[in-house]
Image 1 (cartoon, rainbow, N blue to C red):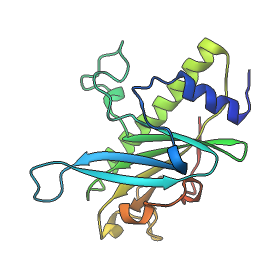
Image 2: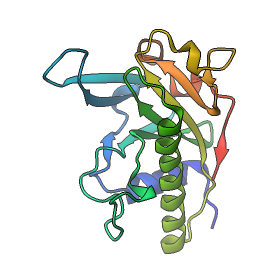
Image 3: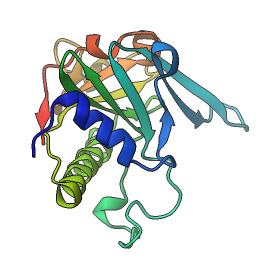
Image 4: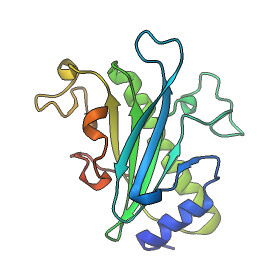
Length: 195
């Protein structure tokens, strides 16, 4: 059965384990928080990105899961052991959008970033199929992919317009300082993948 976007969004939020949800969109913003080492530091710091949104939104931290991504599959060196950092689900204006985020420091290794975001796409496809198999609820998901860095000179890795990764035009690059405080629906991406 096909549901409207708001109903399907509510189903996904209700079906996902609380262990995955890291922010429920309190106060009209999504907060994505990641531990990392600053240059020269011996202790980890928190990198925090806040994104405003209209409608409803919640975030999961896919890369923060302990243990196998799928409890019944071996993660050792397998394709499904790769993970993107965050997935944000948003319902706004009678449609649902999914945003995949990979956090990096300065490196823009396209192959690594592509593999991690691809894993997020596959995870969303699996989630959609599992819900459909068990409940009969179905709705295509539309996804956008982003990589965030603190690289102050990313030009060599980006396209001529300095927006997308040169070798992967479906992945939009943002500097942490630029994206922080933006609205989800205002994030610039020409590429929307439907699964």
